[in-house]
Amino acid sequence: MQTAKTVTVGTMESSDIMITLKPNASGITIDLDSNVKKQFGAHITALMTEVLQKLGINDIAVEAVDKGALDCTIKARTIAAAYRLQGKTDYDWEALNSWNV
Amino acid sequence: MQLKRLWFDINPTAKRQWQTLLTQAGLMADEQVDYTIGLYDDDNLVATGSLYQNIIKCVAVATTETHQNLLAPLIKALLDQLDEQQQSQAFVYTKPCTAPYFEALGFKAVVATTHVVLLERGYPDLNAYQLLLDQRKVTSTNAGAIVMNANPFTNGHLHLIQTALATCDVVYVFVVSEDRSQFDTQARLKMVQQAVADQPRVIVLPTNHYLVANATFPAYFLKDQADLAVAKEQAQLDATLFLRKISPILDIHHRFVGDEPYSPVTKVYNDQLAQVLTGQLQLTVVPRLTVDAQPVSATKVRQALAANDWDTVKKLVPATSYHYLKGSQPHANS
Image (tube, rainbow over all chains, first blue to last red):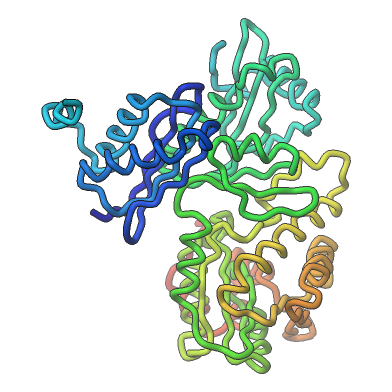
């Protein structure tokens, strides 16, 4: 899916993550800025990639400013960003919940 | 802690508090702002930030409150405001020592000099602009570049382009994208494109904010500097940005600027440009074209337009611009 739009979700408060989605020609590129990048950078990147792919987004540039967000926060923010990018508000809770099994 | 918009016109107390806070932070209270917010602790203003177009400026946090990370909510609120205006791109000019605070909030440095750093956030970014330049690139052995506002496009601009064409095989003409002139960006681009339509060796490009304009360069953080010293900083930043980020993409070897005999600021600009480009890019200052022993300038054309003096306009602009101006008459002051 390709889009010319860019969206930003989240805040820069402690324990939150601010995610910006920008158009990208091909593939998912993630530019992560985090104070725990050394410890969890790879994990956070993998988590966001997984969520995006599950939502069918394969070509996107992600810019994330992480202030120590937990996995649930990262997931929720990524989902919200992806939905907002497509202008969708009808969250498919059934599908989203099924990931947690 | 409460976030509020500050209205200077109707709230002189807020304005005084704002000025005091900025002065304490070592900044000058620059009132060229469109939108200002403040964080209040009871009745005390403890942090503030402003927008001017899509430039974040006048950001200060009271020294007693620096432990609370007030910068994050402040910048977030400013970004939200930009978002509301459909602006997805934000810029910050700041001192090198405070740049890391902005980088921690997701800003990326575009270019830096000894005293100033320009950072950006959002999209389209410098990468996107460089991609656009790369798409428009033409193979050349000695490419030249000219930056112009073309407000409106005159015979002087045409003369500059022709002078460049005499020594260069390809000439890139950058038309300033900032929309703060009498003729809007589209009109100025169009006039330039029409004038060089028969010239395949001339490529017309937008600057998309990646030209540091004197008018938008916020100098308030360079305290204790006279106007000319400020112009020097702006020129240095602009020249560095051009040299490092733009000219390598297009393989530019030569830059041309018009001579401005009456403006000391432009002289400072040209001097700085020459200094930064030394040894890397050739700089040629082209003397002004004269008509009836008078230098041609866009200012003069605008004056003639305002006075409905079409004979003078005809003498100063190429036929393409003349037709365009006659057709659109954007100055209509009736």
